[in-house]
Image 1 (cartoon, one colour):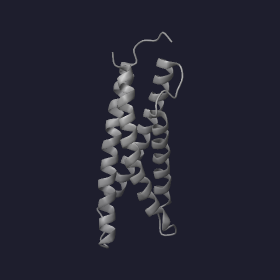
Image 2: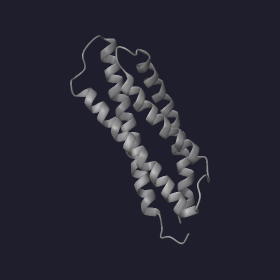
Image 3: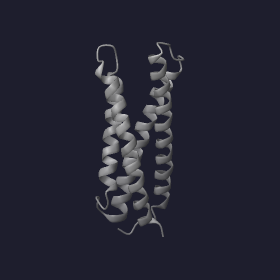
Image 4: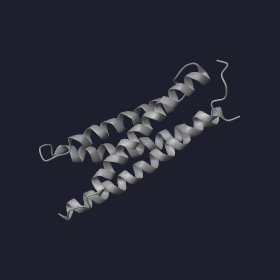
Length: 145
């Protein structure tokens, strides 16, 4: 395709990925704080859970933005998808983020499995974020002049 440079799109993707990683770290810190308070049988500050949920929703939005940018940018630049292992790594991240959000919604006294499942998914998400970041760096090199 004879389209203008997609460099601006990749800049948005880079910032979005950076924000997604910051969101993940904030979620790990706030989730760890909640877990620590729970293990000590203490209550956590009233603002902590809503902040944790809000940052989680933000991360879902950022990952969807990254998915859209990846699809539009790759189709616009190459005309097709699947030019590297970044696509499967990205799909794994998207699925894990949605699975994490779903499992978070399941956490409650009637579903004791959900909390452990949520934590396990987020540990897997850490590995997936590392892989998608490494593969993304390889992809970015294809677009730089």
